[in-house]
Image (cartoon, rainbow, N blue to C red; front, top):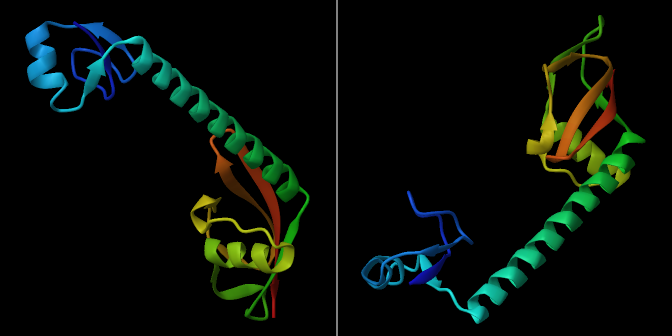
Length: 148
């Protein structure tokens, strides 16, 4: 019996593969556990449509991330943090503080988990911070920290 797998099955195949299995294996294991469906033209067409729409959605997300990355590259974030006389800050600048400043100053919302700080920012000065928006899109944002 030809079966199209809906999920990965160990030692049989990955989701979307059309495999030939014995009738008993298909009727007693794969079909009842909803690991696959009997392969016919209707099922295969539905799978192709689903994959096509998924590919379009992923391409659109990637393009939106690339556009946002280009927009962020041109921005500078200015943070005013309490600090001492020698430029040292009381505490440090966090990813949440940078995300909040981006939202306030440029009306761009970025999740704090996407902001990648190599080291903690504990002194006044200019820094470059990476923001990973998508596996294919990373923006470098200039962050200026001023001690108040």
